[in-house]
Image (cartoon, rainbow, N blue to C red; front, side, top):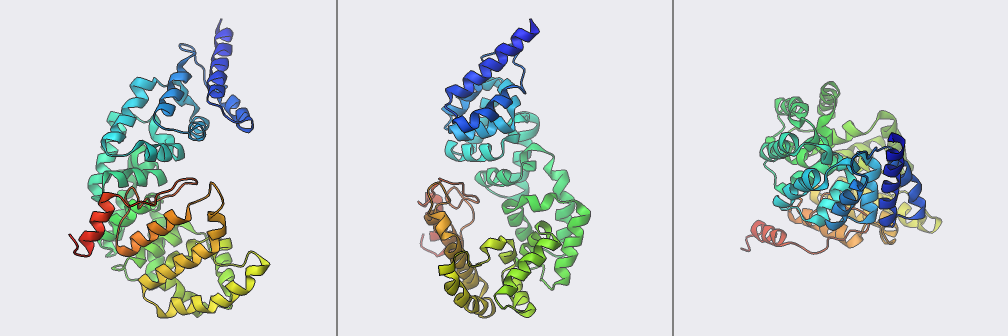
Length: 362
């Protein structure tokens, strides 16, 4: 009898997946997912779970990503377990279009208890960083620990360390919202990275201190050396690189292929000729001017990729970077992340209001 129930369970799961029109290339992985769950009590339960996602605007691709990463979600009671979590995020002003992007990228929170985990962690992060509701969900996308774990106990020692070294609270909280993953590092390694940034001469009162810290936290020594060699291929000296890193530490976050390195033979003269111009930008421009220049060069380098269908939308990226240039922080349009095929080109009322407030136009 038990064997028959297992067979019916697997058939039910396969039927649900097929009903959602997964491509032939993806059905193999979906069938492997079906073997991981035992639907003893309700063989039709996957239907209600998958239909819930579909009814809330999740695409077939997004549903597949969630099920493949967390197949046990098919065992959940859709109305009692999953729906209240959706409703909570909606109550915080998160539209379904954004929620589907975030949860398909990081569905871990769907397995957490809403009363004992999600709500208290959401409120803690918002109160601690003084950020908006939308910024909490953006931060969660990049770091599941914000809502799915005891984030307070993880980051508290590292935040305290930055305060001891004189980093302003406003800088810490901004960085915590934008790059929360940097703060969940082992405390000893985090401490060594902070001390290294100080040795490099960065002023803890300046925002570049935390930008340099992000680089040292995320990049290994071997990766650092490889990227440094790419810069040297342009004819840069060690002194040129030091000036560049002091001006814009996140230049080292670019991949080796995207450090404005010629990819095609017909582009070699363009990028070879521009390397001296880039050096001059590093050495002679203000930080803000250099950030715009760096962004422009990055877009030149990856523009051909961006214009390919289903890749990152160039106009959305441009609107986003101009928003930062004007002084805007992340919001529903000034989104911290872009997924392929998503366009965010139009300013929201909050963005327009923010620009007017910054420039005395209210």
